[in-house]
Length: 485
Image (cartoon, rainbow, N blue to C red; front, side, top):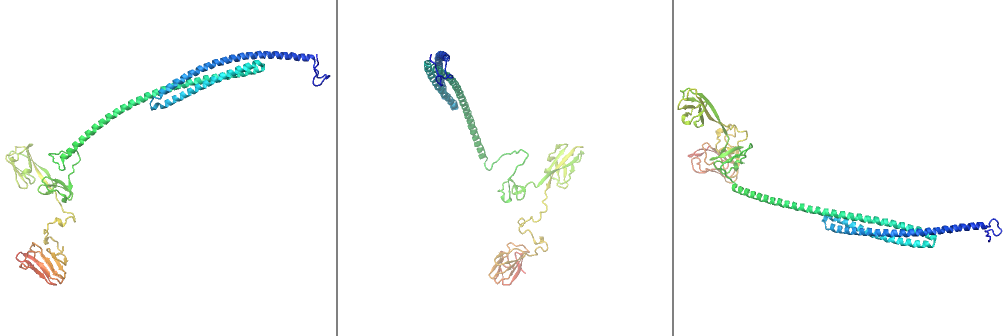
């Protein structure tokens, strides 16, 4: 047997290998070969296992395909539910959208499942190829077996994912069914709402009819009221009026100047006088006096027929009772004396209670007018004579008055005429005895004194005054007329 030498070369005792060592190495190599054969056998076993795994993967893939079919059926059902949901009312639109979304999700899940099955089949094919390669080389077979095992694991994971996707598809289908149910419920709610709306419309129509009837009745009432108002007119007449309540009735009111044309029976409030007034033949105050009943009591003695009252009386204003029984006025007489005497036609019985009531007129005193309240318009023209004037109250004449043109004098005038032209002063008409007028001509023009129907100095001629002339004229009577002093 040849001797193998190491790097040290022949004769290098440190590196020479003995046959025993080589033999030992051969034994090791044989063992390694045996181990390799064992590994190859194991690889073959692994290959078989890989094939079995591939078959199992194929079986799983078949299951995945079935799940995918079921998912497809669920998707079809979801699509049908979505189609049904789309016919619901507007309020079901959201549910329809959800159903369509669920359908889309189911189709996506189906697509993903099919892709996962295809991927699993590809992985099985790859695992089979790798197992065949492992038979050629133990190491390659071992590596291929490991790789195949990994692919199988991936395939199993993909199957699991496909199962999950199928489950999701089933859940989506369930959600679609729920959405369809909700859509159906929404449709039912819409139908209920429509029914309620119809009922409300019916009620509204009924109310409108009632309102129309009420409006018709109101129009009829208004027409009747208008007819009543027209029948009353602006100057209604009534046979009698009864006023109730605790307030008051307001009468028409106006000034004296606003009095209407008088008709007997009219009644109003005079705002100028501050009094109520009525019209019979002329306007006069109402409510200026009040009547009181004055009681005179006597006791009959069976013989006396005369009874003296406490004051004056008028028979028509008396009420006589004997023992509470009213006595006709034909059974007694009332004298006009003061105090008045009542004389019975027969003597009242002894002890009889005699009551004689006399209506007394309480006269309202006008009293003295307040200062500065009587105007000249309230005094009759010519009613105030000189004798009624206080001494010094303007003297016997009016104050002097300056005249430059024609003028009609009044009694007690003192006139100074100052004009360069002729001027006529006319004496008062219908004068009374004692009336007096003084005239002085202070100008250059002639003053003519018009007699105004009366004589002057016993003649029926007008008088005249030259410049600076004057005259005092006093009316005496119709024969003399105005007498110049």
